[in-house]
Image (cartoon, rainbow, N blue to C red; front, side):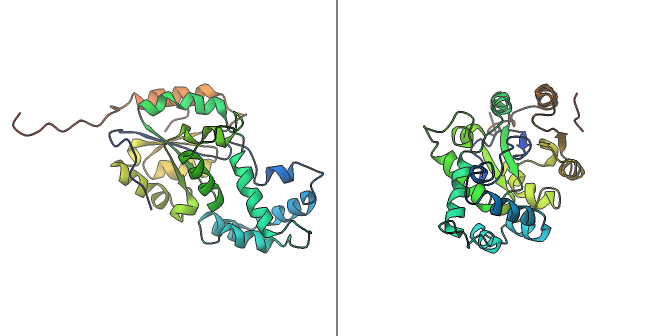
Length: 250
């Protein structure tokens, strides 16, 4: 279900990808980066198989399969005290502490005075739930570079597990309802994403796209592209009068 955005007068929306653009933190980072954790080796082995199974990953990211079902199917139950419930709880904790691209988020803050800034991610139900809880009740004790500290830095979240579609496979289903709720179309939108297929699909639907990867591409590519794009058309919608009275942008 698409919620009506809080600022209905904006004429632009900037969609920003999560993994590869706003963050590089993996799922279960506290386990897969800690060689002393009892689940380190078995979980990494099972995640390798999971991430290589396109059908399962697509079902998980489009909401056809829930996290507990996917975790149970990984078969880590034979490790004492570290079964499905533990892994589901730990995934939530690790999503809260995912490290974010603070420089990019800071650069996006002035953009919010002229456009919606929306995280647009092919992602799973747990991530979407954690993000929205943090955005509604931001943590005051989260590390400065964590999702817990920056969840309110964007206006909304658009997640594949909610809309039951992937960005590159069906951009109309992924982005269309949100744009319609804003009274906008693809011509009013810019996508910042690290995947060329997502950018190509978004351009084919009528939007603009910048392919950009954190830790690889310079930040000024984003700021220059945004400035040029935002200046290309008026920022605000005209208020009705009562009757009677670059960069790699394409």
